[in-house]
Image (cartoon, rainbow, N blue to C red):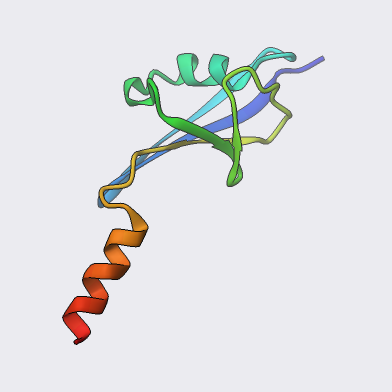
Length: 87
């Protein structure tokens, strides 16, 4: 059986890293992160096509693993700041 074609994406402010991999069947999100060499993934939230997953989630052919960086500002606080500017 051929390998799984996987893409690992990590968005940065103003740019992104993308690595395409072929992994063995039965590989997990954690395996893809390790194979990608994207060091910033440690401790970050992970997803597949926008759905949060854990590192032990099995992969399917064609999956796009996403590494989510922490938010710079809490969304509620950002709304409060915008509201203060409008007043």
